[in-house]
Image (cartoon, rainbow, N blue to C red; front, side, top):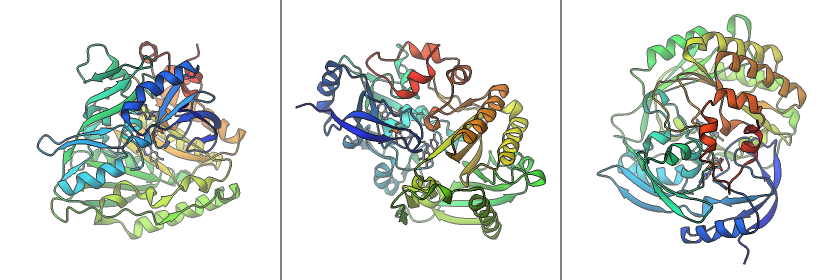
Length: 445
Ligand SMILES: Cc1cc2nc3c(=O)[nH]c(=O)nc-3n(C[C@H](O)[C@H](O)[C@H](O)COP(=O)(O)OP(=O)(O)OC[C@H]3O[C@@H](n4cnc5c(N)ncnc54)[C@H](O)[C@@H]3O)c2cc1C
């Protein structure tokens, strides 16, 4: 029986891109090698995917083979003494947290949603609010299994002399299928967080708060109002926190409070609704400023409380834009980007600003670099949105920065290649039996 079946409607998380694929969903690791060979015999180039939380086309492989790894979600071993967990690559962070938190352990790095798989997180070398302390998830991967298109599975460790381990961390699924991984966890004393919210009135204050917070706080992040301009350009709310030293070790339940049943009409996301939301958020932030003790879920994953929140952007979907600019020019470049966004009247209520630290990322194509990262959603309004992102590209490129492939569905090959000078070195490790829409787009010379 052919393990691949046609699917017309694989959509990116941002909802802008949609394409037909041949999809296989294995249930056992022992099937994987035959499945890969079968896909290749049918002439497909392959790509693994996880929970498909990447916004653009890095997880899409139109008209080719897509291996949905979410059926391979078993926990293989957990050793509390060495704090190492070995799991199948389709295991979600959500499922892992349900097991490890009550054992006094936590993920050393987690993105802003727990609905990602281990394979997807490694392939994007994800970062979290503690980048200035822990760097990316790739720094905590102690071993992984990698299945190549010849059907052979390799067992790779960080000291792998072939360079394939470094290429696979942040390798966007192009070096093969990650079948399992072993990750070193971090100890926690409780499932509570001590958190402080500090409203700030303009961009300079953000940079002062970030510099003042990084020694004493493991986690820092800011929400910013990207529509306000003039004196209030870059106003927002700075959040910093640490795992609490006392309190219950039982995690809060982190339930989804509401699920968007359908796409909202595109008009729901307009300048006025977003401005109104931002004003409310600032007001609420001022009201709630100060310190508080919260559970893990509200601190790490506030967006997960709304299921399928991406449907709020309507049928046209949204683009996510995440850049990093080097520390030496971060103030000017971030100021210029916010000015361009505010002047355009486009922007979203999901705008996040954070400083990255100088902990080196292990992957050849890892996104984070020392400096400041800005992440925003733009409702897709066609040409005007693309033009605005083009203006932002020019600022990021001029600053010597780059964009995050996990969030991207449209950057030019020139923009990618300028931001990732190691891309040609990386290309040597790409398995010829694998491909993605993203890679075809950005690796053109
Ligand atoms: C609300 C929200 C908040 C987010 N916050 C952050 C954040 O704070 N920091 C951050 O870094 N990212 C963040 N992201 C992005 C997200 O963490 C990444 O896109 C993550 O990689 C998604 O994991 P996934 O399982 O959905 O992978 P997918 O999106 O399905 O795939 C991602 C990539 O991994 C590859 N891949 C998947 N599984 C495998 C495998 N088994 N073997 C080889 N390759 C594989 C795919 O080919 C693709 O290239 C956020 C996303 C959302 C929706």
